[in-house]
Image (cartoon, rainbow, N blue to C red; front, side, top):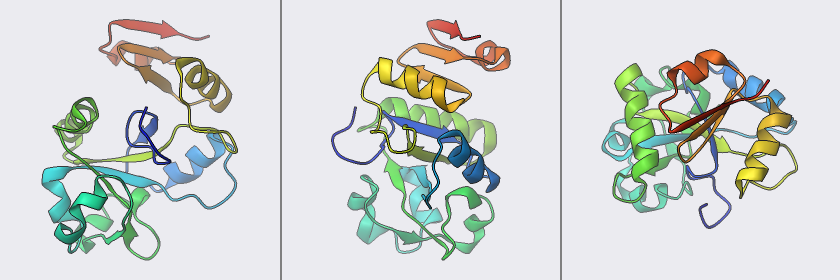
Length: 174
């Protein structure tokens, strides 16, 4: 678990940033009713291309604490993580500080060409961000998300998700 209030990869829900309808889907699944924007988690080497005037805020962006204008060419490519004013509050991920999280985003980039995933806190509305495997499973069951990954374990209700999982252990929930 990370220290602090941000979801920085160890207690996150990740999704494709390409379809803005994912925001409504996630809010419904997580029983969130208020406006809650979703953040892009971005590989460090791509941040300067995606965010305008990125370099002065590079250190703070590692902790998802600053917003940047999103380059117009990228707004249409990652609409689910761009705010209505054309900004985003990214978490820039480095391989040296978050190697496992970095590899997840890197694998997503290899499959899609996008070095960005949507990141939101892994919690159901009005509950704290998950801090244990038991809390993760409770939130997973109550939210009807597709899968939860904890270390080398993948838990899913969907056989297709399990078929593509490359984990040490796979658990199916009926």
